Length: 83
Image 1 (cartoon, rainbow, N blue to C red):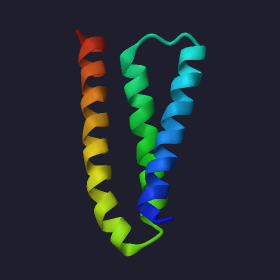
Image 2 (image 1 turned 90 degrees about the vertical axis):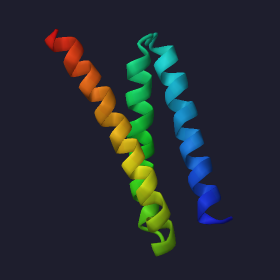
Image 3 (image 1 turned 45 degrees about the vertical axis):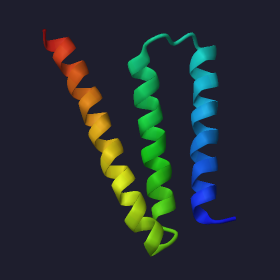
Image 4 (image 1 turned 135 degrees about the vertical axis):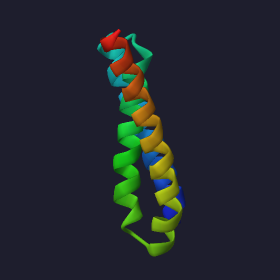
């Protein structure tokens, strides 16, 4: 199995498990789900990016996009708290 396939399966599995856990805990805020998904994907992306240089190059773009999304969600929450 190629590293890309393992990456997709791993991310999908963790996202599914976190959805089940958050739903079981009766979490209803969409920002909690989004933040959880982004953090999981960032951690898994960082772990998989060390396996090969080619994977590191392509997954670094994914990491940048996920980091930007996380910062945007964080900024929105800070604005809600301040106002």
